[in-house]
Length: 438
Image (cartoon, rainbow, N blue to C red; front, side, top):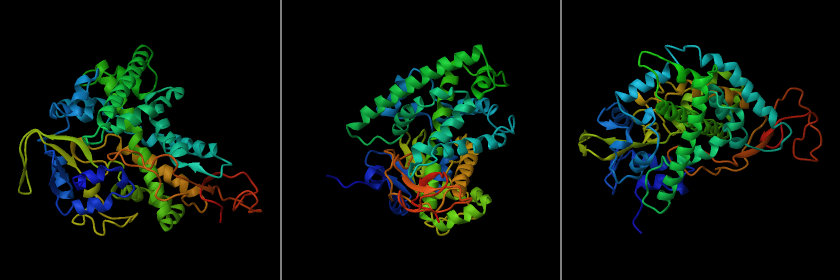
């Protein structure tokens, strides 16, 4: 069997728990040509340059026709989401959606959600009161952003559970084609999920067009801005994108964040004493444990000269964001987690015209989530380290069963006998990731 390349090793599940030594090795050769003719680019300088290079397309229709991703796009019944388009179509659609999501048109939308986000977080934590152990993904970091994006768009609460299976299938399809027998099955599963999601959103959009509410989907469906009105097809692809992208990366960022804090208890204690630390801390998490590890769907639409090499037109290019975020030429002591790191212009949300559309909301969600956990947990510790990880290499994060036990809300916390478990409490407490309370 041929030896795996660094890129193949990064995509191998056995390295999912800690791919960072592989990224460090990759940085020694910042432009690597794979045996299939694709390229992996890893240094901060080069990745940033290519993220701003119009010769690198995000449109899957520019991929080779033999590519499974290109074939999936061709067989889909619905248009490509705007993040997978190039200018001018990308710019026009992004402007139309931004009118209902953020500055300069809806300047107070995200900031105005602060109290609602805190309420959702506390409701989730209240719900697990009395448990000795929770699954951080299932019980907290998944339902929180899903609830937020569904409320924002106006998806009925009873339908939220539908998106889990669709999201899992679509996220797995982001990974590179490894040329094994599982690829075709995975792509077919993703196509089915994409069509089911699109059919669901078509019905919901039709309902909002007939009877608008105060939600974002109603506003998108009925807005006549300078660029005109979104077509029904573009509404379907955009709303589906917002639902999936609006929670998937945030799930990983919250979970990776809490995992990192549990591995750095001194930082968790600092956050408990200083909630404002959450602001720079989340930026460092985006650098240190980015939820998006690399960009998997970029293709050169012209020959690109880079560091003495030529990336030929038609080549697929993987931009290794996680490697760039730990590039020692850009970040001093890059393997260290420094919660108040200065000059932290990471690539956790990308850069250029495709900079993460939902970054302001994701930042606020994770700041609130980690602060709530820091304030309400007592002596937290992991049940297992490393935890199991989700299959995907692109959107990397722990799977379910990242669990431990703990007691929360330390006010008037009085210890009694340990007949049930170490640190049992006299009054009702919220049990999370660690055993006992101090």
